[in-house]
Image 1: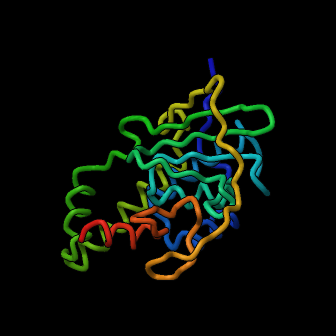
Image 2 (image 1 turned 135 degrees about the vertical axis):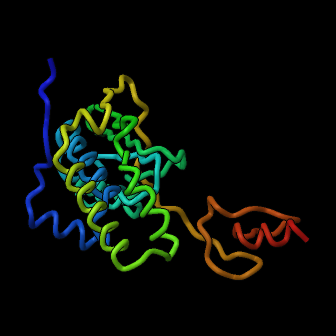
Length: 208
């Protein structure tokens, strides 16, 4: 039987820094923290360069925790967004191809009926002061529950065999757009009637 892992191992100082990086604490960020802990354990420590790659299937709050704790970032090219709308992440190690996919289990984000009702009301700009305070309390409680929950209740972890590791990031040349004149990465330029256009100018010219 696999060892059951309960609660986060992130120390208070690091937790404060994660919250500062993201802007606030919430259940989504807590889910990202728990996913990042799986990555650090199964694939490797903080990525100082591109050794570790993260493929994220969502753009939700948890991605900020992934970036902060694993060191995988869009700027380095080792954080890749797959717009699937799923709370799921794949972490890969370039040196030996080890890869794991971490996906949220059904129910991981479940809230009480009261929480759901207040969330809808408060997030739409309504609710009394008392309701807003209660909503914040319930959200904080749900966040804490995620941070304390057994890992197995939150995520399914699948080891991937023969996963295709994305190539390392490349630095491409830039060319001036024939429309707006702005420098555009050569791989994003589109040709229209012999003119090299950036994506926005190409779209505008094509719709005329």
